[in-house]
Length: 206
Ligand SMILES: C[S@@+](CC[C@H](N)C(=O)[O-])C[C@H]1O[C@@H](n2cnc3c(N)ncnc32)[C@H](O)[C@@H]1O
Ligand SMILES: [Zn+2]
Image 1 (cartoon, rainbow, N blue to C red):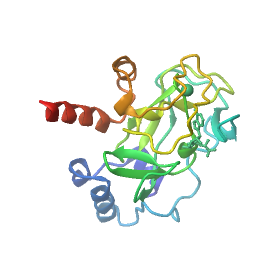
Image 2 (image 1 turned 180 degrees about the vertical axis):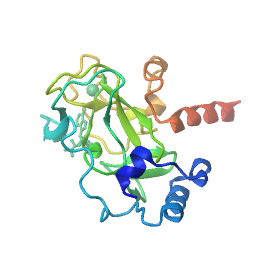
Image 3 (image 1 turned 90 degrees about the vertical axis):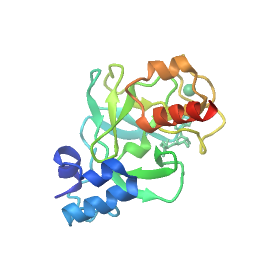
């Protein structure tokens, strides 16, 4: 079984559903012997290339991902595959729970932030983030999401947001500091652990 077979068709072993990403790794290794979450030796090709997007320069933001074909609301632009579990946050990490960070395979880690994003995220059966279209995307448009859809707080980000959206707040905030109306707008397009954390914190206040 390859990463892609698992991400697209695999069934997740039960222990993962109950535990953390580390439980998932053990469960996958046990269930599928050859499955690997660290290192890509068994992948026949880099995932997420030539599937309607490519890496280009993105002025003011380094590099970014651009559409090489149009996408419609609800399309999956990128299928997430976890390449590595990290010991902490860094500029290209994805936060997957209150204290867990991973690196996605392929080009997902190169998607830039926008305060008026065209994509959101959905956790797939492997625990990785798929990128789902929230607003139709035209040819050559940059593919973006709001980093607050995945990060509770933002640790690694320049002072000034360069997203260029009419709705730019100028500064990137994590989910923790997102206004309620934004949270509502992003419903269904954010990592579920963020909603769980909000619920937990509001219970703790009572
Ligand atoms: C996950 S990486 C995205 C890929 C990155 N642009 C690259 O070339 O590798 C996150 C980094 O990209 C840059 N970035 C992403 N979105 C940005 C934005 N809206 N404004 C300014 N910089 C941004 C910041 O340097 C940030 O730390
Ligand atoms: Zn912005």
